[in-house]
Image (tube, rainbow, N blue to C red; front, side, top):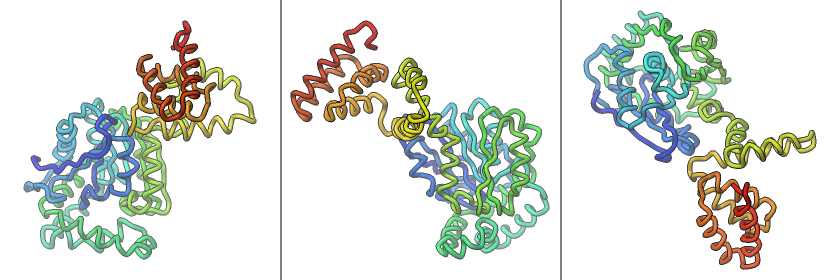
Length: 376
């Protein structure tokens, strides 16, 4: 496939996350997740062959073909290794890559997808329908399968959204992908998956039952299962907030996990160990709050690097007169890669905007910390 229509969002230095779409959709299906995901990842979206206006060579296709397209996307964006998240066909595609090329996959989210899609006769019946009437003829059937009835009633705008995506799918591309799903069976390869894996399922998904999702989670080494209710097949569109939160917790770690790791990296093991030993039933909830939100949510965002965050933190502590805490963050600034002259420049800047007395006190603290034998 030569025309992949790749879209990339998010910071250039952030970890790469590739999103793989459902059959009959386009990469626009991921729009509900983009704000949250692109704040932390370099998010790569692409179109399956014959979808989203891409080339759709005559089929039938195999999962080797479709999975090879995803590998080509990784190569094109320069990602030797990336996290993958797919839904339905996209989940099976991501699973194919993780099973055949485990060294290319960091973390894996499989939503409403499986390692095999019986019965094959149903796919060939759909192929005949698409060859005769085109993918757009499936609109009513797919809306009923993709969303719960209440969601469709409450969101009348979803039907034209689905229709617009189906309009971009060619008959060759759609039918070719159906043929790939009719014949795929990755079950013998599931033991080769090494990436930490989350299986997501909707409680009312007619295409991928909770029971089948549980079987997949059991077969993939170390995988976990999360069921979202109410939800049908296009779970990320029907339950965007809960879907995004579950995916983000798996891909980036729970806020408290992210926070603990970042806190140690910035403040040092010795300080964190002392703090944890001093914790009490009274102070533990406050420590947990800071770990989750300050260190787990803010300090881990990729929009600013840690050097920059240290500069900002030093300036704010001087401005507020928090000189006891300034001592701790001077050491952290060094740990985050700031040189002593750069720290001096930050403190000099505070003399202009925070006042000379504040900067004078800050320089005194800095001299005591940075010139001491254990100042780093």
